[in-house]
Every structure is written in C-alpha cells, then in structure tokens.
Length: 378
Image 1 (tube, rainbow, N blue to C red):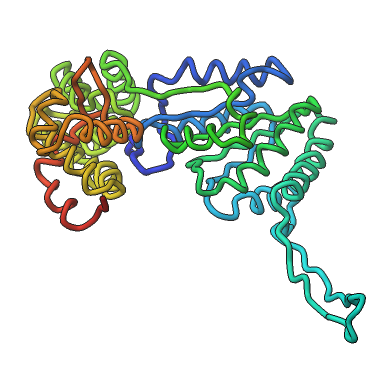
Image 2: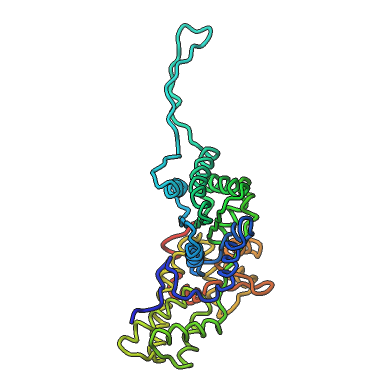
C-alpha cells in the first residue's frame, strides 16, 4: 500500500485538511464570472502552513473547468518565463539593443560617435509585452468559454520590477473584463512589503486569505479517514496521539502521518509504539525543514531574543525577555516587532510573546547555540 501522506515541500496532499471554505470560495469566484472578488487574491501565512498546496489546489479547480493554468515562482526572470509559457515561444523582453549614432555638435570641428547601448524595458514595455501575450492566449480561450489562471508563489519585494510589470499588465486585463484570475502567495512580511510598494496599490484590493492552524478535531477526523480508507487501522488512542502531536500545523500533519505509515511496514495496524516513534522522527524533520531555514535567515539579535524566549515553557513576558537580554524594554521591543512581522512569534496577550511555529522552543533548546554561532548579523 502506497503511503498516502506527502510531506514533500510543494506537494499537494491527497486531502487538503481544513481548507474546504477557501476552496469553495475559489470555485465560486471562477463560476461567478468576470469581476468576482476572488479572481484577484493572495495567500499568506508562516512556513509550512500550506500556501503552495493551496495554490496547487486552486490550479486543480481551474483545470477541472478547462482553464489554462500557469504556475510560477517569483524568482528572477519569472516574467520572461510567464510570457514564454503564454506564447509557447522564447520571448525576450528584458532589453533592446540600440544602434550607434553620430551627432554633429554645433561650434565644434568634429562629430561625436556614441553607442546608446541597451535600455531596459522597465516597467511599461514589460507590462505591455505580458499584457499582449496574455491577451492573445485569452482570445483563443474565451472563444471556448474558458479562462486563464496565473499563480505566483514565494512573492518578495526583491523582484519588485517584475512584479510591477506583471501587476500593471494584470490590472489592464481585469479592466478589459478578460476571463482571467491571478493568485499570489508569500510569507507575511514579504507580501506586506510588496503591497506597500507605491506602484502596486492595485494589489492591495486583492482578496486576502491568511492561513492558520487546523483545529485538532478536524485533524483527528482526517487521520481516521485517510488511514482507514487506505487499508490500515488505528485506535482512538493512536489517533488522539497523532492529532495532538501536530498542534494543527499542516506540514506536521503530513510528516507524522508519513512516518506512522512508514514505520508500520507490513502491518495493517498502527500501534501506539509506532506512533510515538513517528512523532519523534517527525519533530526532527520539522526542525530540519522548517525551523532551521527560518532561524538561519534571522539576525543575531533576533536569535538572541528567541533563545531568551526558549527558556520559558510557555508564553514569555516581554519585560523578562528584556532583562535576559540585558537591554531596555524599548530596545528589546524592536526585535519583538520584527519577529512578529516575520511571523515567527506572536502576542497571545498584552506584554507576552510566544512561538508561532510548533516545536520551535524545543528546537532552539537543542540547536539554538549552533545557529547563533554559524550565522546571523546585527
């Protein structure tokens, strides 16, 4: 029996737990026709919360309606790749070469020759190139009552020029009432930087989906359904342990389910012993795949703040954190604010902070010194 749990990054799990409302709203957006609110949207949330999986599911919904779907990631050159996918040809839009010209300057005995080199087609020409390519594809699709969905993952402000061109082109397509939808996704701080760009005000009107954890009863039900429908059995005690260990975090659901299934080997029954082993293995995997990348990208002072928090078994008092850092409360709060913006921590009550990602406290207690010594800047 194949393992039904898929903890590979970017994969869509067989069952998208707890996202039924989001999927239904997107179906409505496509079915309601041009101009529906949900056709311009963005998805945000912390690492491992299921942003990419939701984009994939949106693509499946569109394909089921015979739409064309183009999925891209917002790294360098993504706009060129979009145009290439739209035209099915390699279209270069980055620059245009200009010839050498001769200028005769009045009052001088000689002419001056110079090369104007190349000029970047930013952002107006690039927006126009994308708009034309998308328009041509839509001319064909709309004759068949079909549409075009573009999804863009891992949006960040470092690629702002391409984002500006894409957003400008998309704005014109929507104004022209073309049968198009655009959904982008990214970490909260990255999306916020993009939305705050003075040229990208159009995107601020996009429908927002903020992903959070899944209620434990829904996780319990999903585990039972997936396990039994794939030919194995698990007691209520096992299902309770599996569900509680995830803390509602989607990536952890896939991880612990994967290892529970894998460790069962040839048996049809997932035992409590196997479950406990799977939970320990999933926690290590979560640290390697989620916590480590998150922490590595932080400054030294941000890491110090997290290490100070990790001394507590629950929510930390911000005043106590400042004492542990040997800093005044205002200085410490600068890093508190930064970490909240990065979606690493949150404030459960006034004057308190806690970790946003499950098991990060445990991970920092075990590996925090390593990360502090090997990376990070003030």
